[in-house]
Image 1 (tube, rainbow, N blue to C red):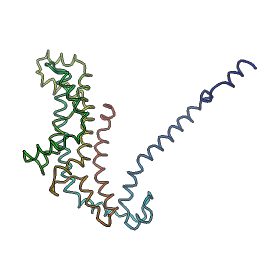
Image 2: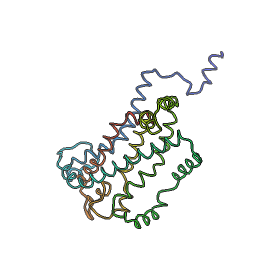
Image 3: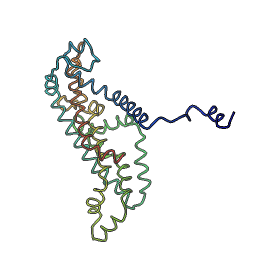
Image 4: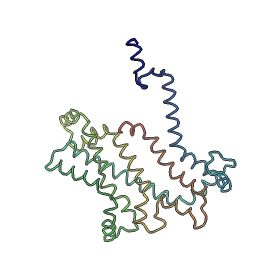
Length: 283
């Protein structure tokens, strides 16, 4: 047996002839399509079910086609969740604006300024991220009760806006990547520290700002636990809690529930589509 024949016989199976580039790309494309379908199927099912009648849902609940589309389901759902939708929009706007302001200022301070105990303070800030949120729910509730914040919107956005641990970390890392020469040039031109931050440094960190804003928006928009604990009035509830009103004790209107769920999901998709360029660049 020649050396060439022996090497072929003892060659492992994974070292055989490689597939052609076209076959390889086709395989990857089919695999990506399969993963995308598995990921998007719940969303597609929700959208399709929102257009069905209750009879059609009962006959074939998993089908991705509609025999008799009923757009009126969305109108009924919108009439029911409109006040809660506006509450969620307001809280998300307050949370995002507050987090962006506080995290950008704190991130710039930790990245560029020198002050005693900076590294220790940043270490303590990061350490708070490992504490489960359920641990301090009771102290928060007692504190908010003492200052009269129960059944108001303040507990739903003030703690999130003024304690942005992840946002501070991400903005600090973003500011550290900006060349120091830009800052030095602005100092030579006579700009003060706040002007440097606002006009020179902040525009360089748009991708990080977009990532922080998207994460904060999703966290605020999907918050169920906060309104459940701190808000008692029906008119102050948010969308995640509003979905529960479509569930009855003996019967649930699935089509209207799915329509309301679609209304809840659409703003998140729209925000991501508008900011995906900066989000992907930051991540």
